[in-house]
Image (cartoon, rainbow, N blue to C red; front, side, top):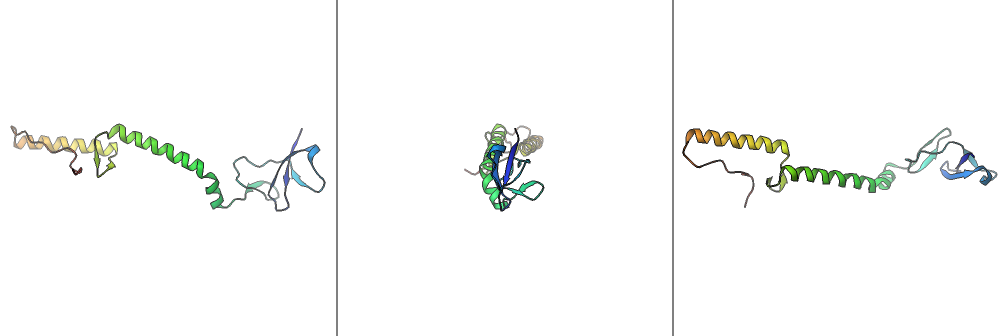
Amino acid sequence: MDIYTRILDDNTFGGNWLENQLQEGWNFTLLQPSGNLISPLWNGTDWIEGATEQERVLALQPEINSIISRYDAEIERLCLKHMIRRDIKGIPIPPEIEIEYDKLESDCNAEIKEILPTASYSRPSNPGKQK
């Protein structure tokens, strides 16, 4: 059995109906709007998005927030995995920077030991952290 989509007088979506539910004077089409349209609008040949950008953002905000939260958690997990003890003024150091920092720290310590081979001095770790 076919499903008919009612087109209201302002060309907005009027619901889906079975043939025996249709009433005289209704405008309808057999073409149903896509499920991702917030406010379906009939343009004469197809259903298009009738919502404004602001209405779309408002309607999609819960989904947007969910995506942001998921990525924030992944970023935090990644940072915590690689940066368990290091930070500069509370801002996590990305892993690429940590690797470069560790190399520079090692090179610095090696150079110091060339100058003072018996000294116990080494470059302080995490110089950006203030106590």
